[in-house]
Picture 1 (spheres, rainbow, N blue to C red):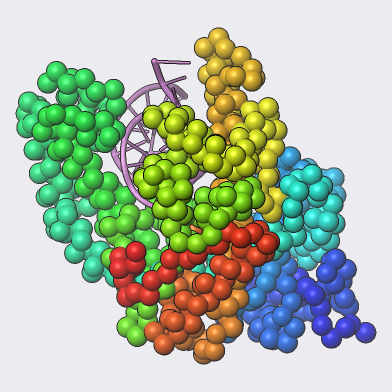
Picture 2 (cartoon, rainbow, N blue to C red):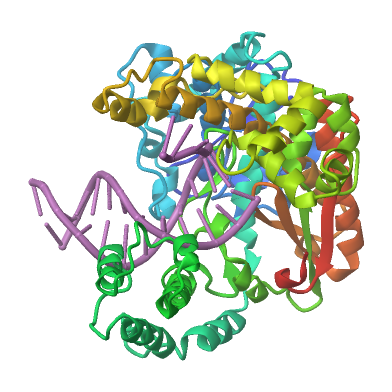
Length: 575
DNA sequence: ATGGCTCGCGCC
DNA sequence: AAAGGGCGCGAGCCAT
């Protein structure tokens, strides 16, 4: 007889139609009873969610969750995303970049040839999402069998992650947090960030002139900016979008530039410098976030980007299409809550220096990071109140900067906060020596050969030994690992924040149609679209979630992770 | 025509 | 002397 509740339930949709199969599991992946066929998978899942609140196990959210979402009356609480967990485990095993589909994991398990991962995204059709071939399984393999086998094996591998992979490595917590990210990343574009096309359009018209009737032609103001620039450079036509032609045009006026970067143009004592910068600003808005972008990504009053959970080796999310993580600030005024709704915009204040303080256990820096403006406090204790110096110095320490006038700032920090500075310098040394560093929850960085091959080749061409401890490429890897421990631990915290916030939002008393949605996430910032009457509770949930994430990831640190939270109608009004 | 590269800039 | 981490994206540009 099957127990009445199961810790986990595996879910496999049928290739076509609304049906599928479910399998109750114990925590370690042992099946409880026989598979349960469901003619309406979403209904069966909703019933089980309400009754037992299991952790859902699926091949990938793209095939296991996204197709169900429109038909679910209630969001799911927890999941184990086999593809994401496989990627984490492969990283622990030093096998970065190996295929991580269900089919690849199954093949490794069975000693079969391992299929390469399919190119992701690219607007896969709804029906192909269900298809077994997207899971990369052999045609004669039952997907549920593969899900159960790979899941059980992953649970075993998670338990076997060596302690050395970060003294506080908690691979099961990281797997759960990463999987919670998959839930949030699926739901956010489903609900969509509210986007007012007419506000966006008015902004574009104000900057660029009216939308051209003929696609591909330059808007009037942009064309004018190009002409003014050409006139300032002797009147000969050239393409201002071509760095080569720009450099040549400047050279013909006797102005020698090495690049067309805006900071270099800014130094110029020539009217063309400013005109070039202005042209580039307009051209970028037009090309990257103009009318074509709106047509592609912000239709029907919602911006729906594609997030890629774990798309960055540090565990940060990446995005695919729509540039979700690079929306220019100026466009934020197009993000406006629906009538009767509000936006709760919250970002973690000075997250990375706080992470450094918590990670390193530097009591002095921890005191500085206890609350309020960290840079202000740092300036008061170490930089005679100069906040800019404090910020520059600390960021330079975390990025491994050595240029500019930063030397004295770093010296001061090293003297006042030896434990924190020692922590990042130790991480840098591990990287320079070819070692692996880990985030707080144990996410490993890639081994040297992957990302530093090019630099090493460059060094070889220059006649220097890339592997030499003092070599250029090894120092570059030192900067990477120095930053990795902080960026990746910040990503650990942010995933824990997302998981906690999702859970708290789901617990708020609201009918499904009037429920707050987490609609945007950007490294250390969340936007919740909420019925106005729940906005205060959402803001409180954000603060509680930040505290919960701190406790989960960093334990009993005195460091606080305050959220700077605004309740607004337009995203532009936050901050 | 297509694909991969660099450049430069948007975000954190 | 040069000396800052992580991304995505579009335009230009060049090879095929």
